[in-house]
Image 1 (cartoon, rainbow over the protein chains, first blue to last red):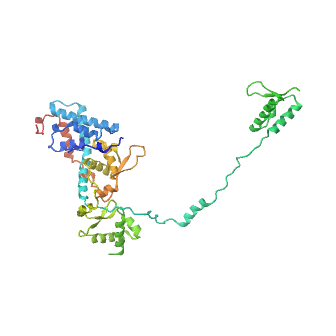
Image 2 (tube, rainbow over the protein chains, first blue to last red):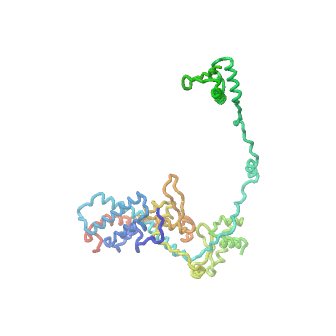
Image 3 (spheres, rainbow over the protein chains, first blue to last red):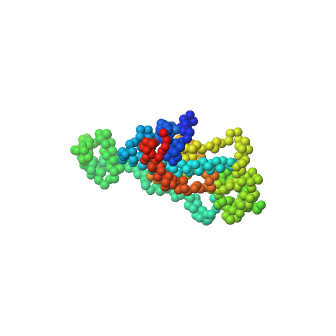
Length: 239
Length: 195
């Protein structure tokens, strides 16, 4: 919703605050003649002080129907409606809805009048409204001090040292893996990686593979893998 | 003047807002009956011949200046606060006071006009305040404030005449309906005798 600034303050109708106020006064008293009501001003007042103000769709839609009923009423009043001819049901329904809304609105119009009187009657007295310095007093001590102590104690106790059990520092030696591979190759010309890695956990297996790759780099072995993810044959280089 | 009446007088003088009797009981550590008696004593003491009066307003008791001294009181300020409330604002306040908490669309629907800027200005003036959104996340709802009660001389929230008393009587409501139904007829045909 856009902020209204001082320059866009409502230009209020002198007499009426909204279409319902206007129409209700109109039909309850005979002082005001429907023909004399400036419809444009009613619409303007209904749209609100600031036409850019957002209406929610439901309220706006409903109000449009009611305003249309008012416009229709006025048009009929100007042109006349043959008495014997029944107006169409939609028109009657709209007028009925308008009547119901006026009846629902009426108590608040009168309550506003009552409030205006109260405001006039209560205008005189002046109040001393100086804030007191300082913080307000604490609430009366209804708590049992022992309970407070019991609640405080767990907060004061030193927390247990966190467990590091899950943080093992494992050491897997590449040297040991190299030695193991070299000793296996000392007795056989070719060994299977699967056989070497048998029973090893993933980390040890990875180190065993690194050991094999290290031997390839040194030119001591060649690797051959028949298919992806298959076994790797580690063959000692011919001497 | 009893000691308790003196204490209550001092508290009412100091407090920035009307003090509920319960608060007076708590602070003085006295029974409600004793505090009520002290208040009665105090009211008698601040009679019409004095400048102050003890008043029950906005959910508590307060000491305020007497109404007939408004003019001289306002001379203390260069520009006294503007207490005027427009008819549109009065009507909006009436809807909120009776139906609170109530949202802007609900007020608009009842009044048949957009109330957004009226509500914003009433919130700015401290006569309305936000009352939260409904659990299902609808529009913000509003209620009247303690300042509203004070300004309109109400003893507390809901210190209003029953809304039923303001409703149209059966014949009046029927007249509204009939007037609208018949409004299309030419003047000479109906009861309206205008030209």
